[in-house]
Image (cartoon, rainbow, N blue to C red; front, side, top):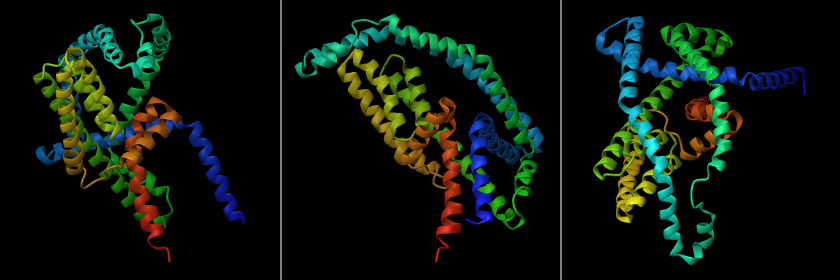
Length: 333
């Protein structure tokens, strides 16, 4: 190994070491970029229709988001709190119903015996202690959220200057390629965020409407979970379906079948119509890529890693295609 290769190897090792120890800073930085891209999409829409300067468009977007957030909070949060309380009441009934079904199947006797007769609060106590520990770190979490929000606003206010800094740090022969790559990152990430937000919102509204028409209890809570888990391809919507299925089982097996049919229709609508239609010009993540990225970053960084896994996977997928495939593999002779 010559001195140049040795220097490159040592530099990569040092950068990897620093990245691991500064992972929280990198996490905050990337989260701010994701939010900035989402804001940039809204700002471009405002500028296109209202013909405003970027600073005024940013102010209008922030005011609209604030007003919308307050409205949604007042409209949904009180009902969600009531439904969460109702879920705690229905849980023992659900366990009793499942035990009754299992009792009719002798082969499932072991599963029946493993289910508790009632909720044992002593088993929940360790979770409560963890929850208190989480609440104890709430001030730090709020500070990080405020920091991420402030960084995102600063990035959005003048994105060109921040891009110039990154471009200037690269060797001159590659600056044009880096500039084009940053533009590709922004387009892919913005398109993915827009498409998935519309898809998740549609699933939330349609599931809420469907469960309400079927008169399923906790329709709002179930629909909210279904909407949020739409961001996790394949496995997310299936996991989200378990809650409305379990609740409908308490009422009647017929209602459970109706809920299952509703969710199958909506999941296929989202997977084969909405998502391909909304993401046909950007990056549509493969389910395996999405799932593995969440598993890996969730293991390394916990819940924050899960939250940024999919946007980061979008960026990595675009970078892999533009750099590894086009610049290296396609030119390999």
